[in-house]
Structure formats: structure tokens, C-alpha cells
Image 1 (cartoon, rainbow, N blue to C red):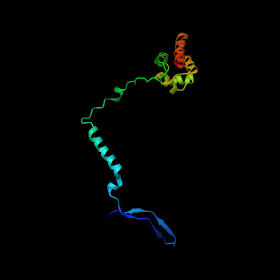
Image 2: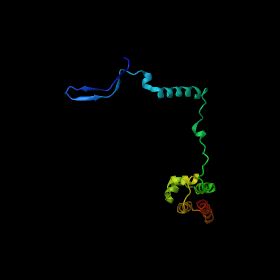
Image 3: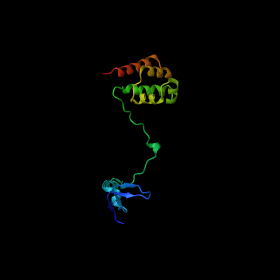
Image 4: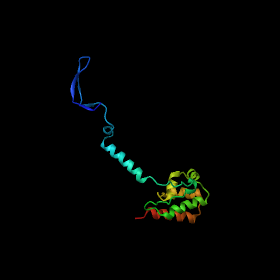
Length: 155
């Protein structure tokens, strides 16, 4: 059945009341009309993308465990990379896991991870709690405090 446009009109209902019927179309729309011009363009783009971007020869996927390598850290502006790597090294040399460090210091695990990746700068309270947790010597503790202070007071 072809699609037919029906103009707005007034219709009397079975209970005697009158209602206004808005303009509409009667009949089954064609598939092209259902998709519309934007939908058709999207379908064409998807097909073209699949044709040109689909790999011609599939590369064998290496084992995931063999491919896992640590991503290079991205340092936030103002965070000294030496502080981040030093924090990670002292935690590892103390033999403390992230979960243990978080539980013993009161600093959330996510914050410790951000300190060690260089995406956040610990404040003096957090750094002091971590130094006590790792049982650091006064020299190492002072070095970390200096790095933190310099990063916090930089320009």
C-alpha cells in the first residue's frame, strides 16, 4: 500500500464528542523512508569503513600475559618524576604491597597509586604517613620531603 498524506481534520467519536486529528501519513513506509537520508548515509559510511579498514590478513594475537608491560608513567605538571619513582622504590624495597600500605598509613590505595605514577602530589601529612609505614631512615625521609616541598612550591 503506498504512503498517503492525510491532512489535519476533525473527527466525531462514537460518544458524540469531536476531536481534532493531526496531519499524518497512512500506509506502510518504504524501507528508504524508514531509514531516512541521515540513516542511509550512516549505513554507507559503515560499509565503506568496513571495506577499507578491515584487515586483509588477520594478525595472530599474542598471548595477553606475554604482552603485558607497564605503561610509561605520565607525570602531572608540577610533580617531580623523581618523587614518584622514589615512592614506588621505597615501598617495594620495604616489601609492602599497595593494599598493606593503604591499610597501615590511612592513605587510600588509589591515592598511593597516583603518587607513584606521578599523576598526583602527596601533601605533607600523606607523605609523612607513608614514610612511617615504610619505616624509612631519616635521610631518605628528608630527601622525599624535600622533593615534595619543591614540587608543591614550584612556580
